[in-house]
Length: 253
Image (cartoon, rainbow, N blue to C red; front, side, top):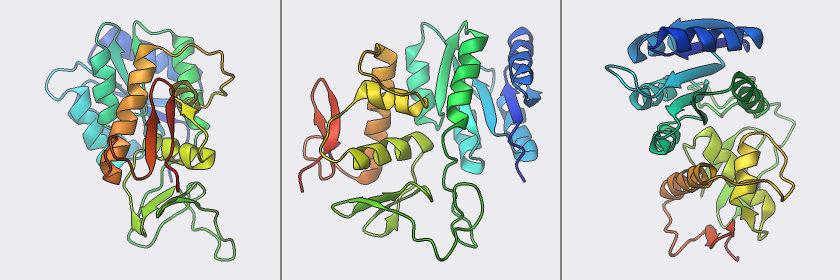
């Protein structure tokens, strides 16, 4: 059984590793640390954390490859730590399976707020040989028919965290699933990039929030990955169309 208050810190710099451990321990986590990517992967396998922080620039196996290997074996929430001037690191981290990123030097309060927001989001769907569990790891009740959101053969079930095209299940990251579910819920209403960015953080959009270039680019990366997995082109979309300068909406039926 996964301990919901276990965290793993993968960081090669001792001072930062100690600071991250202190921040997470103050937030109520039991923290395990590793100095290398390979050691971090083995630690994730062993302690099964709910949250893992990864430094991008580590000797040997970097944070991107570490994230990809962790994502192959775990649904832990991954937070990438990247230098402020290296925005491309954050984008590559998201493509590697990270859920969020924090720039260095980071503020402990911001890190805790981002982790709290992630923990408010449902766990990702994970297929098993014995069937598909629900988001909390238990089998769904046979008498309860979950609600599906559907558009032209593409459908998602928020309760079980399953996405399908013509009954073929899609392998989506947590953020890709949440974006797709949000768009299917909105129908033909345009959903802005700022609204999607805040939704991924578990925050409510009021319309007056500032959308940074990095947040905008992160949503674009998630959308590009989502479209690739859907097998559609942004120039000739079957399911999701871009409203230039604003955001996204479903195509007309």
